[in-house]
Image (cartoon, rainbow, N blue to C red):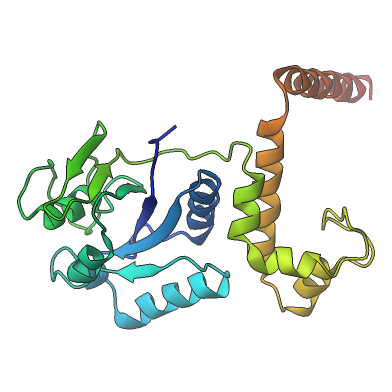
Length: 247
């Protein structure tokens, strides 16, 4: 649980040292599954060359990400005014992302003063972990924003609907599979695997979809089912170890 009753969630990644498409897709799944509208913020654009930023934006769009994407710099203030225009009175916005990507600095820019504590960036331009608690701030225009500590781990917990909304390209292809319950893991006539084999669908994008879906399904299992799965795996390891010792 990160926050409750969110209208919009800003997923913040630094395009300098923090950009990670797989992690971004993970955030998008859980934001959508929680019923909020996501927006991607790529920060620290002043620290990368224009072609690097263009490549990252291309990766995001090639992965089928339909959420709005905004680029900004807390140094040059590029994109800050565009962000302000997105904030509506009485709506609640949450900022999530890794430590040091500039979440608190962004909110200070929106407030117009240094209310949230921040630290100077390192010599490499990487931010330092500062925020240790959640804080809700009411902006002058009436929007409510929540700053969050940096995320060190972000699991997928029973998010089947969020996965469907975050991978519309794969879901669309799945409608052409031979079997309605196709798992896209090797069945004949799988339109998704055919797209991967032909190059129409990125292998990395497909692999991340399968990984997130399996993780979601695992967390949907009951406690008893999880315990049984763990016991079965434990017995398998013991058996394999015994077989090796007998050889």
